[in-house]
Image 1 (cartoon, rainbow, N blue to C red):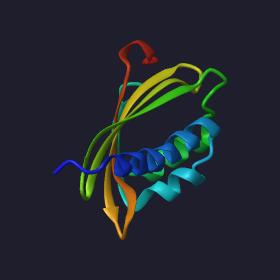
Image 2 (image 1 turned 90 degrees about the horizontal axis):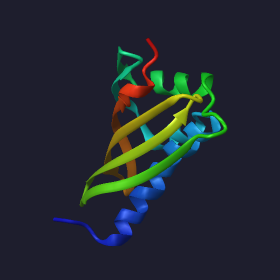
Image 3 (image 1 turned 180 degrees about the vertical axis):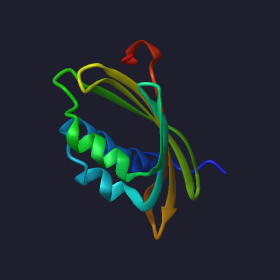
Amino acid sequence: MRDKLKEYAAVEEAAMKFVKSVAEGDSTYAKELFTPDAVLFGLLDGVLEHGSINQFYHNVDTVGAGDNFKARVDVLAVEETVAVVRVLEEGWGGRIDFTDFLLLLKLDGEWKCVAKAYNQNSDTIKK
């Protein structure tokens, strides 16, 4: 069952922690969003990244977003205890555009991200 609009706002607010971490190059905010056992999947410059969300934290903390970084959050679905969010990123690290999909669960009344999968736009892959 689709949830009430106030839950969409709560999911968006949670996902903004992801955006804030990326924009500021500081994983502190994202660590509030992701569960400790969250997973990451995607191809970065053609190389598979998979496993612990700690790789994402490392990337955020070592590569600044860049002055022209932009992001947009789209809450795609909220179904009582599960939500799907799409985050569009442009200019991460000064050159990469991503589409991220975040899978969130409502745990103890709080939206937490359990998985992140992403696509790097093909025209931003460094070969």
